[in-house]
Amino acid sequence: MAAPSSGVVPAPGPLIGRAGEVPAAPGPRRGRLLALDGLRLVAALMVCLYHYTGRGGTVSASWHASPGHLFPTLSRAAVYGNFGVQLFFVISGFVICMSSWGRTLGDFFRSRVARLYPAYWVALVLVTGASLALPAVVHPVRLDEFLVNLTMLQQPMGATRVLGVCWTLWVELRFYVLFALFVVLRGVTYRRVVLFACVWTSAAVLCQSSGNELLNQVVMPQYAPFFVGGLALYLIHRFGSHLLAWGIVAMSWLLAQREATAGLWGPHPHRDPYVVVLIVTVAFAAVAAVAVGWTRRASSRWLVTAGALTYPFYLVHEHLGWFVIRVLRRGLGLPAWPTLVVTVLGMLGLAWLIHRFVERPFGPRLKRGLKNRELGSRSPRPGF
Image (cartoon, rainbow, N blue to C red):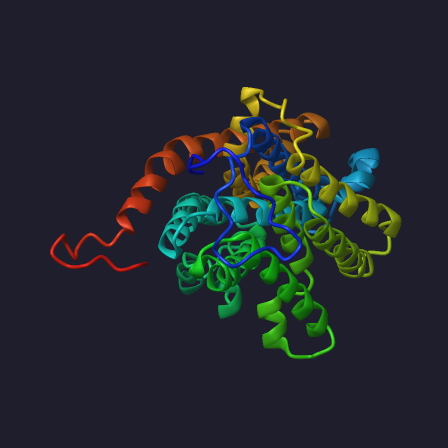
């Protein structure tokens, strides 16, 4: 974030003020953001444990036994691990609002492309290579499907996903487009974020009874409350506590717990609906603690590493982890717990390699390369 131009930031007030007139606020303290990085890794590890010990199917074949039998206690908790995705969405609303403040639409586009695609492309290649080497775990996709996976638009195109977790990236992409068109395009301000949050929430509620699949795909009623809650929490983080922002957070939490219970408990009766509500509440409360500054003392350097590892770890852990489990457990006969620990640590190590040798060198290059240089200094630069 850019350094503030003035020392005092006026409160937005009940009427928020005219669009574009909210001055830049002082950037959040470093400790707060480090705590957010830690939360992101926690969410990724929750999803990881769900994929390794909280579900059956392919992972059961890799273990050559039910994870519930191998890890009776851990498995009962891990069945809720997929709720780490909802925590990701709350964090994403917070981070996208923060990172887009003061940026043009072009800046926003370049930052998202440079952040998402390099590690994603490498993960596609790694998982595809593993599927060719050991198709008993995951069958390789056809060439046309692999190529369309490179776009990250395989779901709307109806192609088979190479990465099981990439459905969440399609959700994220739609959020980015909505936020870019309705907020970033004209410049991010307190007023515009609030209006966007209120309109999106209203549309999400109305969409539930519309029966229109296209509208449902655009509005995403099952995920909107999590993103909106994150947006409002960033406003609290940046401008301080105000009843309007907290009201948006409260409304988002009420809708989010309903969506989570209906969507993630209803089809899975072995989960406890009260635990589902508790997890959603903890997700909102954890990001709220960052927003109000309760985590400002979290300054350990390992949190920087946690934030760097989260995205590549999330991309590679599922299918590649199943391959590793199969080799260690069924191939080498390693006991269950050592197999689990080695697999998780191995995926974290692979994530570090991707971050160090792919994201760090190629992300900035891709971002610079997306700038329109060919027009030269003689032609006016486009606003994008």
